[in-house]
Image 1 (cartoon, rainbow, N blue to C red):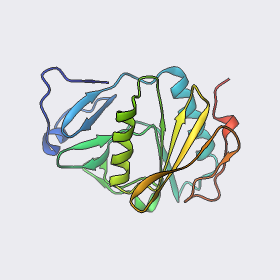
Image 2 (tube, one colour):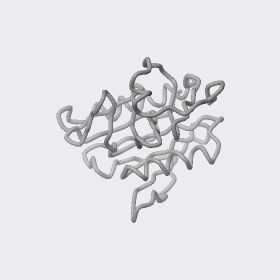
Image 3 (cartoon, rainbow, N blue to C red):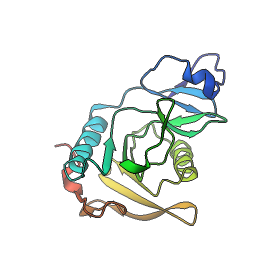
Length: 183
């Protein structure tokens, strides 16, 4: 992840007038350019999407893997692009072409470049908008951290390397962890 040369912070209004691009997030007004995900990362996200989508009632649950702007706050502008987001469809708030509401589940797949402070920064932002559940996937270790929002903080509810994941707010959805990993 790199910042633009001669970085200048952008406002929400300036950002709205910019051309759409892939592989960027905005943190405190600073545009951060990210390289595309590696193959293994993409396959894990796709597998998880397929598993969740196949069990979701399309009218009630929206599962998204395409890059989209999830606005954390307008001032200073912060917008993230989760690897995967699951919404109760009725809770989606779209404004200016971007999402301004918290997903009920966010999935982040870590890459070797994810350093702890960047991960913590993102988790703090998801906490600030009230994301009730986050799964942090560690591909190399083949494990998944499950975090729940409780008392205003995302707390660790366990680290799993096998078994079944069941999103807290989607009790009819189950994911066999063994099916997430590419062969």
